[in-house]
Image 1 (tube, helix red, strand yellow):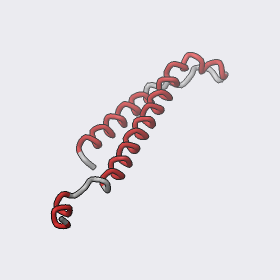
Image 2 (cartoon, rainbow, N blue to C red; image 1 turned 90 degrees about the vertical axis):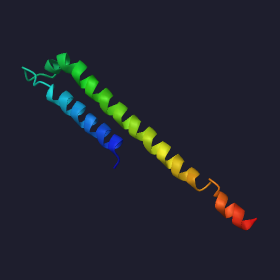
Image 3 (cartoon, rainbow, N blue to C red; image 1 turned 90 degrees about the horizontal axis):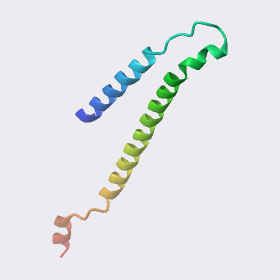
Image 4 (cartoon, helix red, strand yellow; image 1 turned 180 degrees about the vertical axis):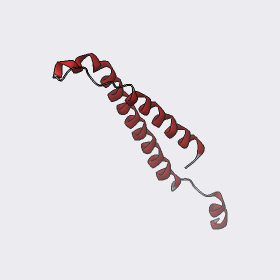
Length: 82
């Protein structure tokens, strides 16, 4: 794992952990007591969604890059064949 991936992973872990720790238990036992926590839940869901979206873009790019490696001509082989 290279340094930038490790940094991005550790940043994500720190951010998500911080977000989770900010969730506070509601005072009551009714479902309506969770309504004031909606912005926190939505922020957590959005962060998780964006993290997954980023992973999909990165993996798609890597698959495309690996697929293109086979199509890059090797000039040394072309010179030997000529």
